[in-house]
Image (cartoon, rainbow, N blue to C red; front, side, top):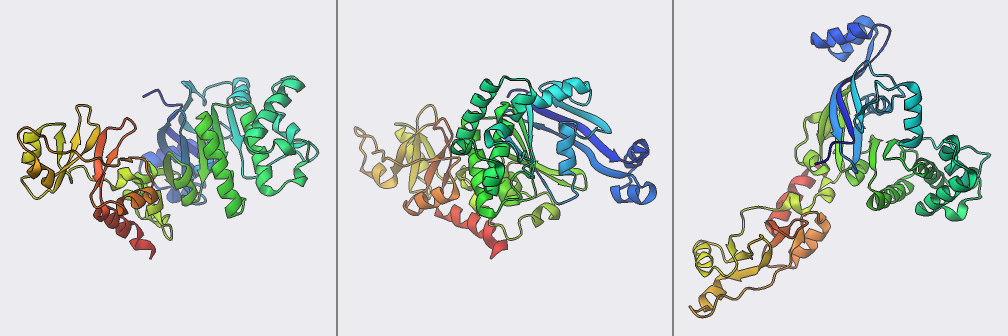
Length: 393
C-alpha cells in the first residue's frame, strides 16, 4: 500500500494560557473535565493518531463538542497544535512556515464549510474561479477551468447568475466547485451539507460520490450524521471528548461498535442497508472441490452436503456439482458441473437479497478478480437482517 496522504501522530490541542499544565495533568491521568474544573484549560483534541489513504473519503464523526471540527482545523493549521504532528504528503504541516502554508492551502488543500460563504456581488463563474484568481491565474484560463468544474457539478447553465438567484443546494454546489477548481489533492469538508434539507443533502452526497468515482481525490469529511457517514465514507473515525474512540469501515463499526457512545449513533438507523455481501458471507458453509477432481467431489459429498462448488486452479468458480450428478456419473463420464451465478463481495444487501431469494442453493461470493471468497444463502441473510434490525423495530 502507498504511504498515507495524511498522517496524524499523537495530536493534542489545549485552549488556554497554560497548555503545558494541561498536558502534564493528562499524562498523570486527569480527565478533560477535571482539567477544566481545576485550571480553566479546555482540552480540544487529546492524543489522536490515524492515517488517511490517498483517494479515500475519510469521515470524522462525533457529537457537538467532540473535537471533530477542531481536529480538521489542526490538519490545515487554521488552529495551531499544542503538540504532535500532522504530516501531509510527507511534510509536517505543524512545522512549515506561514508563507508555505498559505501557498499549500491555495493550491493543494481546499476547504468547504457549512456556510456557503459566496460573494453576493460576483457571478457563479466568478465565485468558482476565485481561488485561481487569488493564485494569480489569468482571467481567461481561470474561467475556462471554473466552467469545466461547474459543468461537473451541473451548474454550467447558471455561470452568469448571482448566488441570490440560486437555491441553497445550488449555492452549495458553487462552494464545492470553488474548492474543486484549484484542483486540490486533499479536500476538507466541514459539515458541508448539514445546512441543506434532506433531499438536497442526498443530492449533494450523490454529486460528491460521482466526482469521487471519476477523480479519486482524498477527502476528509466532518459530519454528525451517521447515515451520511455510512453512505459516503470509506472509513469513519468517531470522536468523543477530544479522543478518537473508534476507527474503521462502515461495516466494521456497524458489526463491532466500540462502546455505548458509538452504539447510540445507531439508534433509529437501519444499519442493514449498508451491509454488503462480504458482511453476509460464510467461508466454510459449502464444500469446495478442484475442477475435474472426481475423488474430491465424492469425498466432499459423503457428509450431509448436497452440492459442492467447483473451483479452478486460480480459485475461480466453474460451477457446482450435486450429489445426484455424482450418482449419475460413471468412470468414463465425469459428474456434470452446473452453472452458478456469482455475487461480488461489494454487492449491496438489496442486490444480495434479490439474488439469494431466487436461488434454492447458496451463491458464491467473489472478489474483484473473480476469486472465491465465501458463500451466502437465505439463512445467512435472515440471520444478519434479524440482528441488524432488531434494535430498530
